[in-house]
Amino acid sequence: MRKRRSPIGEDITTRQRRRNLQNRSIKPLTNATTRRTRSLPVPAVRRPLPMLDKEDHLGWQEPLSVWNQNAPRVYICVVLCFPCDNHRRPGAIHHIESSLKRLARERPVFAGRLHASSNSGSVSIRRSPHQDIPFQVLPASETSQQEYACMKDAGFPPGTFVQAEFPPGGLLLSIFLHHGLVDGGSLRVFLECFAAQTRNTPVNLPSEQTFPMTHIRGHKGPFTIHDESTFRGLLIGCPEYTMLTDLSGPTQPRLLKNGMAMAHIEKIGKIFVFSNERLQELRELIRSRNGIAEPPSAYTSLAALAFAHITKARVAAEKYLPGVHPRGVAMLWNSVNWRTRAFQGATDNYFGNAALPAVTKVSMAQLNAACDDDDELARLVPLVKASIDAVDQEYVSRRLAMLSEVPDPRLLGVNYDPRMPEMLAFNTWRHFGADVEWNIPGVPVTRADAIRRAHGSWNLGTCLILPAKADSMKQELFVSLSVDSMRLLCADDGWTRWIDRIIG
Image 1 (cartoon, rainbow, N blue to C red):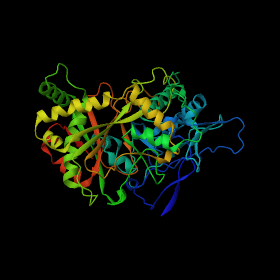
Image 2: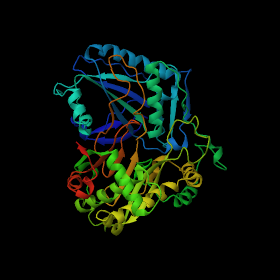
Image 3: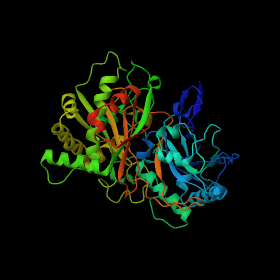
Image 4: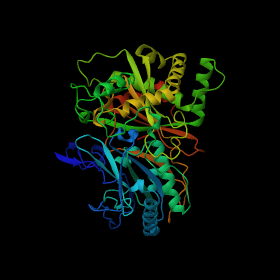
């Protein structure tokens, strides 16, 4: 076992050293963003990571905003997949590095370093004009023989990236962003700003992580001594959150003491591809069964379908919490971007976290019926929509007031255990980055062939609609489950009748 240091200066986990990247967390770097380029098997080009000088009088420090203080302290990693001319690789490396240097000068928050207090758990960002965004070029491993074209034909399976094997003829740009500064919406902002630098064109997008707290009546600031009783009282009005006793937060699941450890559960990820034609048929079926004028959104339709069939598979296959009685109610945890729903104008220049959970609750009896009865499936969709529509100014203000009173962000948890088979987390990155245009020497396209989310290890009970171009004829749903649940899901005719292709 080894102790790992977080990018914000505190020990966050211990884990056994493993060579297979599928079974280990992505190694964090020292700042909020970093790029890794992996492509042809040539001698490694390694760039030292810039460190913050102890005496940097040109720099400055500020606390993270309330939203960012209480975001998960983990890295988000996405992989942009491009074809690349092998002979022009040095030019591509130089161009990417130069673009990142300009980006760091123009938007210092992207190159900031995060530092945590071991006493209060609060995090600050330190910025300096001398800081760059770390960039490394990693050599392809000796065992990587698969051509980029073959990976593309295979649909860029998710396992390809968690194993970190990279092909000749391609450029896979891995982008690591710390969740303490970035959610899916801010990921899009970063990609657009980075790509604009490769094109050498200006872009006007949010660039500050501070959030105006004048919206909170009587707000006292982030570093005052909070009354824990006030926090507990506000927490009651935010039932999707809970208080952790082990300082494992912020915003981490509340794990029950019994049951199999998450690390010991065999998990896997697959991508389920829905053609627009089949998805439109699903939406039209739901519209007709519910007797409404317009078909529901693709999100609510996919969420309802996945909620029913994935929960059915999990309940049948997973027994990771012995002694815990089966729940009569299932929960769909939607992640809702509230930027257009609350605090109008306050997020115009805000670069940071702005998503909240909205939980759809359905009886297990109704959910099971929805797997076999299209009428019951259709009835789920308005429930999903209603829970999302509930995220309005009042909803967001109540959560912000609660987060502002957290005595220590590490006490904040989300009120579920992912080993509960009756829950599913569902999110979309559909519109985050796939249409961004790049100009990289040796890359014959302006838009990435695909964007994949990379994980250090598979999750349990999660779904993500992957980024796709506006003119794409398909939607890709990345699902991470236990191996046994995934096997049942792939054998479920009620699920696969809507699927065009399974990747992975």
